[in-house]
Length: 511
View (tube, rainbow, N blue to C red):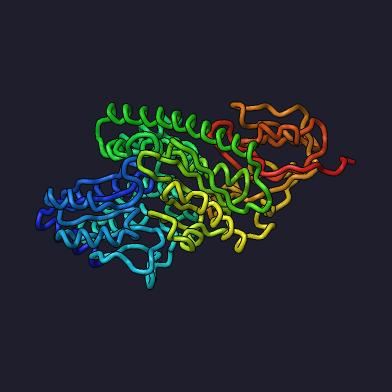
């Protein structure tokens, strides 16, 4: 941190242009926004580069560094990327450009030869929170930099509280563990969203359905706010996100937010079409118990939604899954993987690095590029590796209930007590509860052809339930038959608090 802040202050004093090199997702773009603001407050001059997902892909590129050097850039600060960009950093040094790497992804054996590397996951780093997202690391750098500028403490505190709103959104969106410091960041940051002066953030919350004075919870950020930010990088260019959060023109902010809203709708349709194609493949080529890891590939599949589709398939098949789009013109297959708790994706890829043009990621999510001719080999080796790691039990979804609930206990005080443990998300899920021998007085209602909504009753008490993506399992909810329900508490912002069903089974006859 000392080396990083000192080099930025040197660049400010010498009036050197600083390039911020980010990523196209929520974490990367919001990292740029907050660090750009911090450096400008310190008196610096910044530009930024956000890769185009389809044309450039993930990670730092030497041609971008070369172009920056030609334009007089002497310092590059990476955000949410760079920890595996050793060759690119060497290229920068040869061009006389210093690099500060800020990242949270797992490093390779050798760190990039940068002026400073800020990453809690690098060897020897004593920082206690290893789960910061990229924006969390960028926030630390912004804090360290502004402290050295001699800002009044009251103004520094206001700035940090403002930055925390963006860091909270990025922390939820990047699915890092909501424990320890991350939980504090999200709790504090989301609480501030009930009042925001940033025109872009205000416009984004408006199109996501949150009127002024209403702050979304972590679940609502994950499903309603973050997807609209991500839609820019997935379907078009993430440059729109930087402009959205940087403009002071509310009308312009509303135009960009509306565009993101439309892009998100386009993303949803593209995702559903790809998922349907994959499920049709599964009908013609069934998945067997011996296949403990899956790879799906198709020509022209939109790389912007591949990661989301992989997540959906993990939910359906409870196996590690890679989904790859084949670009025949470039001669590449590129895509993303998602995993189950028992399987470390990056370890799997590192066991077969000879297959890939490039790869990276962490335990639960990873990306890769390889030649299409090696797809079948990757499918076979990925499955063979998985058989050495995963047992048959690992492939069966298992839920452990935190508590058994009587419907008579389902009241305002119980709900308030449960929500006191929020914010909920990865690493800090809402409590899993079970109710036994409830009955449905009427059949479930199907919502948007995908979801179920119904009432469960017992002893005169009622539990309002939703079952997301369970429309094809409506037969498991017979009217008036006793059922045991496993669920989590949810407030989706539309219908208030309800039970989000995770599993169901036939109960014992009601006495």
